[in-house]
Image 1 (cartoon, rainbow, N blue to C red):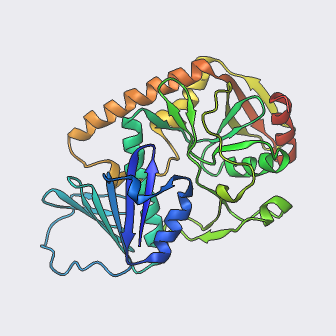
Image 2: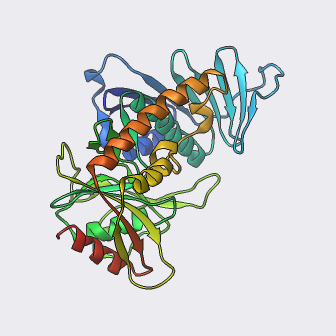
Image 3: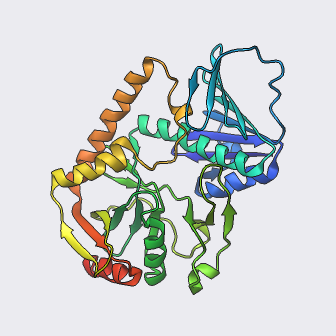
Length: 334
């Protein structure tokens, strides 16, 4: 079984002997599924293998790098990464990744993060910069709300889509920002601690995603929703930094350029919260400095342009989700 994904002309082929995991990855990135016949050149190849990695023939070598979640070894021009429940062999020259694990959840999680890590770097080299935020197309705006991980982006998004069925989806977690300050969709599955009980969300299929180092999440595909995906939208951008209140009603205040740049430094330039495998992104060589400097320059340029173009606010979210949704609707002229 083989699946082809087209991420803005970055072509990824996923194949292997575990059809269930390959299908799950295909559904996770359903918006980017494409026909193999349309692409003669594959940029990244990922093999999903449900068997144990045979490391009995490996030489006795010291780990090149030890991170919180992995041991990284060098085998000539290749890198071998031990994630304890999974092994990955990366051929950087051919851009081929072999992932081995008998544990399906580990196989899916590493496959998912592999795609985000390798594709994300190439997208940014093309000038499509990832922003850790949720984004929707409303009647009058492209709405972007930045919140940290577990800050309530997906909870806010599900409530807004429930109230405003005519809104379209840009991304649950990672819209792409161009160097000119435009917004491009990157729809993936909505991720929550538990499925909502409201009528809209009972109509979609929820899948439990068990993760190695974090509590499980429940996922559903935005492609199953009636709202549709926003494409080629030219509406003005409303960029919002979210904060959480312990009590009281929600508030919204205008923000200036430099104040918003501080938020973008976290969510875009540094990229805190973006799905990435550090061991894929960095080779732990001196050349990493130049790569990070190059990508950092692009991220700063996109952040500056976005902050200049957008209407900028801070929303102080109350514990009452409905009041937060009503306040946003008021500012969005809904």
